[in-house]
Length: 163
Image (cartoon, rainbow, N blue to C red; front, top):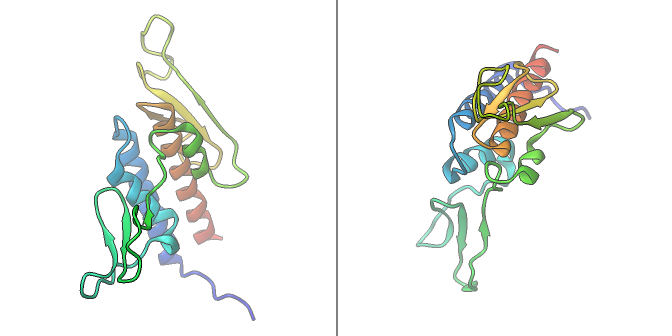
């Protein structure tokens, strides 16, 4: 039995979603829980609980993530799913890099704080092989790498759609 191919429209829609998230990352000035949740939805759609709440029981969504309310389980803390801190930790941001892709992060600003050869003062630079744009920037190394990784994943999705 072979798996049915993913419709090209779905692949291209996923690529557009990842690219839009990369644009939001590039504009971020620090960790953003709402953006992290949107990234989580895009890269782990199978792990996002579907909010089915009957008489108060089931998965609920709040600003930080998702939590489960059951009649039998009144444990504290509640069973929760929180998106990883992709925009606040370089160690976590690297988990967004597609498998097999090379990556690097650097600070392109000159030592005196003047603009670098890329023209961005005080912005971190990241590169992930496979991205449409060679250079991606962000306010922190984690944000720059998350942006580059999402763009690379979008580019790989487009290649899959054309292949």
